Length: 305
Ligand code: NDP
Image (cartoon, rainbow, N blue to C red; front, side, top):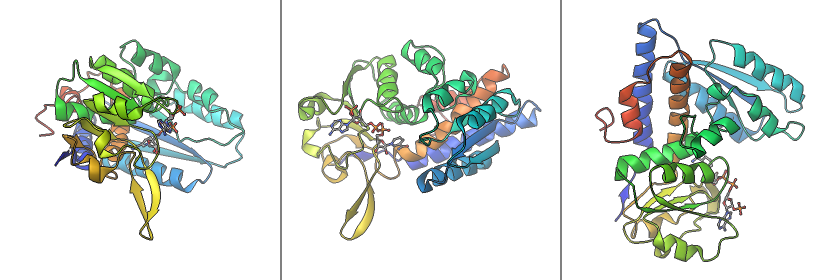
């Protein structure tokens, strides 16, 4: 049976470590990291995400600022708020919860966030830095996946990695991160032919597709490390369930290690949002980013083991 990679436990320890570092910054009268979250409209799932992000920021003893705007808010008003937050020295990270309503151009909004406060890592400057191996802000979900992989595998150089999905928020940045780790990377998507053959070659599989149980166990290379990003709500046996893009029951008999859904990648996403906020704060104030956290981010560290 595969080793179950416990993203929830890992994320809890990462958040605790971030909280310790935030306290240290405050005790030395340096700065309190501030996270501003903007929600437009009343989408129930987005409301839950925003509440969780704000709560976890507060638990990590960061300053948390929430802005709730009406669904019909004019784009200019949203851009004005972003500009105000860009200038606000108490705010080090700005997050606009997606999706946005149709009257708002999401690209324009993302581009309006100051790149060094763009803790989602979606601004073209941060996307470009990731693509060129520079020191930008990395999108939270792929960063969380990479941490789990590094923690489990250590050195990944030369391994075959398959990323299923090519979205800007998960698939593409994930592929770039794996390339930066010296993996041989393949990206597959809805037009790819023979997904099974692609999966069979992969030492590492990251599935970010949004199709319930698309990948059955017999597609996998025995011993592969599987990171399942997918979150799919299904009805089964008269019950609502959350399942991943990988069929966990069959995959866990073939894989070497696998993340569960829920309890795998999901908790890491918010922990990485806090990590990005802390890192953005340190950079804005010219403070060295705490080495312990970097080590924990990249695996093999004392504080997480
Ligand atoms: P998108 O819908 O933006 O992208 C999905 C990708 O999967 C696309 O590239 C698409 O191909 C590809 N795809 C769709 N169907 C197939 C198929 N049958 N075979 C191969 N490829 C296919 O999704 P996201 O990247 O935003 O999210 C992916 C999943 O991850 C979702 O379930 C989402 O809920 C989850 N998620 C989880 C997070 C977490 O924190 N755990 C955070 C973010 C997302 P094409 O480009 O050709 O259309």
